[in-house]
Length: 160
Image (cartoon, rainbow, N blue to C red):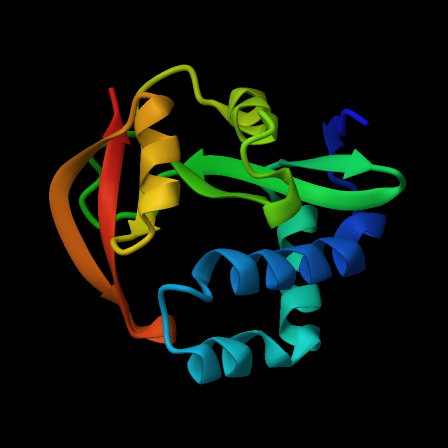
């Protein structure tokens, strides 16, 4: 079954939050302290609240749905960096592990891809994600910072 891509709507908040928490466990589990990660995703309400807020004020999100279940999402918007290297930033692109390698990630990227240059932050240790971003034209620009919530280093990648 090929997932359908569509704009996220307010009624997706609970399912979207659950999806994001599950994706974090799958994507970050091998790269960060498991207890720290589980503590970060353990309370669902802040995640739901964030989805409700973000769906209300934007930028728009695209979700992937298969069999009535959300299996991925992506969102891009104005750069949040203090000194931006690109006007836009890919804030998030996640799919459930079962969908890795199926082409869903590139479809989500194309659905939110800005017209001009774009940056993103990715866990330095997450070689799978870094390789995915390289295939989409991103390159590491040398910027690195500690993502305190997960006590893990991130690197910035930029797509000209």
